[in-house]
Image (tube, rainbow, N blue to C red; front, side, top):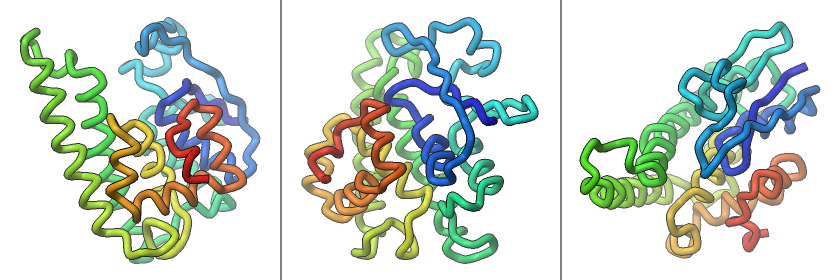
Length: 214
């Protein structure tokens, strides 16, 4: 059995989606947080950076980093059908966009949400946050322009890229404005939210920003 260490409004939703789409045997173990920060000594032993999620494999091996966990699960649980075929151009493109979101959206979200971690100057927090917003919006505009008008982000099929897109949209500093100016992103996010297995996870994780798209 897999054990997923999770908390609301975290990237644990991505590996959770893989496990859920595969109907895998797993349990969720919620990590204690105080004021948004991990406050759980036992979890700190598992995740040295105190970042959620972490995953314990059936043999006891522990994985950290949401994308590494999600890709490992997608390979181990092909029944999830959440990645295009191995070696295909479509899988390569999914990888490209996953890295775009991790580097240019997910990491920028951290700069915005925890701006004090990214400067040693107490007067620099506002500047870190403002720069994050500019880069955040640019990264989403690139995605909006890349979606070809179909139901999904890449290759006309549901994939892990759609899950990450929907999650990162929920974390945006102004999700309604982002969705209003990004009809392609809004359409994909609405389709993710309507999925039988992945869709309900957004309620579980208290990421309700997409409810109006259902």
